[in-house]
Image 1 (tube, rainbow, N blue to C red):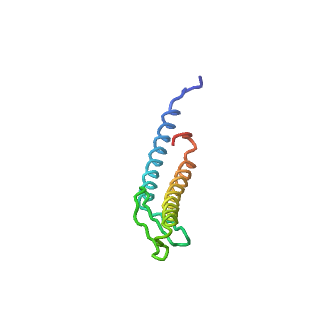
Image 2: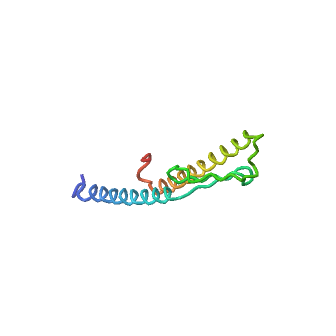
Image 3: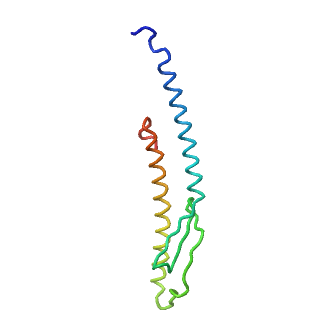
Length: 114
């Protein structure tokens, strides 16, 4: 064993890893708060139906253009509402995945952490 052995080697690395983990945790919490306070909107049918959800996946609004309300074709309106809702959810999911990928990109020393 070399003179001095492991003295100072591992504790310093552990301290650096702990600082990095704490910094990443703070970044994660900040990212989570930003996503939760965001609103994701999606329109279907050329703007005939618009759905908005929060980052916590709570529906904020659904707007329907009165011109697309046809009692003879309720099925079309249902399809438009579903498309708008599913589109808004996908936008929120995509934003979450993008933010997580960015966060994981800075975690070279912690593969598989998330």
